[in-house]
Amino acid sequence: MKTIQLRPLFPGLAVTALGVAVAYLVSLAAPVVSALTAAVLLGVLTGSLPVLSDETREAIGRVTKGLLRAGVVLLGLQLALPAVLDLGAGILLAVVLTVAITFLGTLGLGRLIGVPRGLAMLVATGFSICGASAIAAMEGVVERDDSDVATGVALVTCYGSLAIAAVPLLGGWLGLAGPELGTWAGMSVHEVAQVVAAASPAGTAAVAVAVVVKLSRVVLLAPMVAAVSVYERSRRTKNTEARRTALVPLFVLGFLGMVLVRSSGVVPGGVLDVAKTACTLLLAGALFGLGCAVRLGRLVRTGGRALLLGLLSTILIGGAAYTTMILFA
Image 1 (tube, one colour):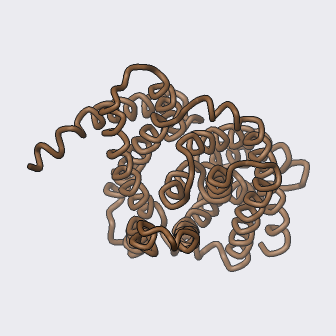
Image 2 (image 1 turned 90 degrees about the vertical axis):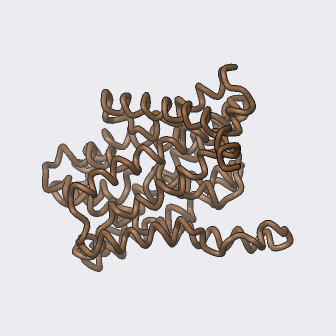
């Protein structure tokens, strides 16, 4: 019986594995393009071509959910709480305020300019926390269209890439250098790879600070997803299925568990390296699958407003990060 149930998943696994392999090779050839970004774009392209049967698309959809949750759980192994706490209370307060201002402000901006609620929620999460990884974690608990996921990742890529050039340029104009510039980059740039690139002109010390500050934002992923999950559940109390869902998703608890394991210091460095690569591959597979379900027509129709939201959110996080850093760090 199990063989019969698993057999339909094999085509989905095969297509997803091929997509992840290509995306990973693209990221190695062009490090500015993360494997997650490449995966979702390849998924959109694959899903738009008449090469996938309905059975294969369904299998990819089923595979996607498992990959997503496993990837988010492993993401927790990248976070060591002692390193984050060493930043000091001032910087941590600035990080929390920046994330809160960006998240809530982006939701408000999305409502103001008429962006669909699901897309605004994903953009708010991705821009305030950690880009495509945060979008992948949030998409499972909020009502959204599949095209919203692809749009959110595309916006992270677009504006995060612009920030690589803008942060050093504006930082010099604002009088920021060295670790100060690294702090600002870590608080305001979307993806980890983009943070490293943006802080690099200020030196290795700036990069080291930027990465730790960035990871302090990632720590907030679990409470944010849990809070949104509780809120979404309360909005759908009349729905039987909603009443049966977990108050806090199990993969969020798994994420927190992995953070505690990493913070204990018992995990060897080699295992952490393997887990980091596995996390990237799992999330890339999930985003490839989500991309395959995208319908380009809707993606194009929401493009202008989505671009405006991404621009405004980028300006918002940059301004909030700078202001809170000056006041509290």
